[in-house]
Length: 338
Image (cartoon, rainbow, N blue to C red; front, side, top):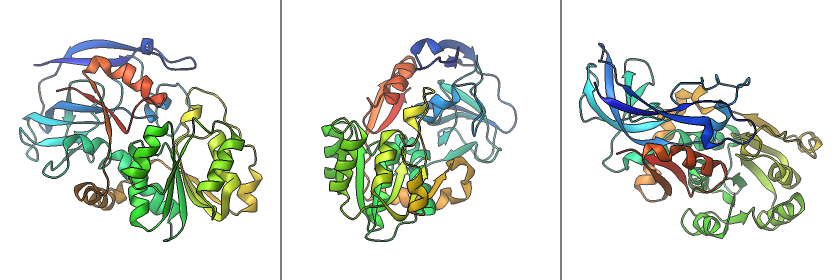
């Protein structure tokens, strides 16, 4: 048996999430049963969707239960196996949660996947070549379905999803415009990720200013938009959208604390005959192999150079998560556990 430090959801947020919603615990890992493997987590993924799971409300997935390990993606190494498909030393990705070890029923479809770290660093399997990258791929390829020469926009442009979206859209010949917070992030979007333009939402903090900035960055209008934020940014995009524009709705981080996010001009959806589609990437497992193949090639070739913000140690996870919700991270937010 191994001592396993864990972070549990202790109580539900009222408004903004706080560090007091979590508590640390220690448990012993149980003895392995046939078909199970013991994984030592090297990195924990922190993602905006976790904030929604903390609420006790109807959503696309069950709420995070109180008193249990917080949900989360992990990459690590098999340290013990009673499953013939996995051996000690295998590098794997799964949903091990906010803890240092997990015991996984490795025979369950999708529970654990071996990864090759020859050309792609292990941590990237939680970002560009993992769930966030596949999320970007699905929204762009299956919902927006851009043609070469079209203008596509993404909010939270330098995060794990937005940066992958930019590389995927450039590979399809699009004009790509990002929206990010701060001049450093905007420089990274244009100089390292290859965005054609990036708008600093901190300098354009209301509908009028954002609309003006989008008009300058998108002189031919907007054909496709990948939504991570909501609020006035979505209102501004609708004002610049072309006829038959497509919007892939992935996240609404502006409303994760329970604030309503009303639309100012919903009639534009009708006037412009727009497609607006929400999606959850875990409901589309059939596209993951194709998406991961392209994403791995983009990272391996240097066309996608993901940034990472890494917090050290499990105890740093709550504050790093709260910082993510405020946009303090640069690129993919991870917690290093080894």
